[in-house]
Length: 243
Image (cartoon, helix red, strand yellow):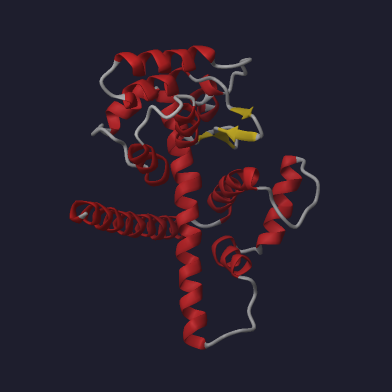
């Protein structure tokens, strides 16, 4: 019930969000930087998902996990090139905000409900993906050391190690619960929903000590990826200065 109340403000259907888009364009035109205006538009946004042209945007994964960067991408696209490309890429691909904003400021800017849903996404999708990646890296190291060639597909083995069941079996359960037709594959648009479903499955079916251990492993993986991103950015900036 608490999660339902926390995300209710972005679950209410609306025919469109023209107010948010209009506010964004006007605020960007009048302000010294585009990012505060973007956060204001995020706070105003009401649609949990929409289709623009041929692309489907699902901002609310599993009804309770808010992918705010996907919404940020949608809003930036509506500005028709106003946002500098370097700042756009840093935000959308690295999660790097163009202004120094404290966590509490960010929470206030987008609203408490959306922030709670954002944390659901952070732990339920971003951290879960990092956990899967960390286990996959462990698996590849083991196989390389053992020179093993006759193995299960990596994604099957990763799921067995993390969730105790193979990916195909888990995918079948996910489809059954969602009322989706049987299939051995999953559309890209549903992949995040499947990841969030796996996160909740792990919480409900693994003991607390294992959940805590896996979460620490995932957070360590995220830190490693962030360090690699910063090194890459530093090299890129150094190369530009030399030019």
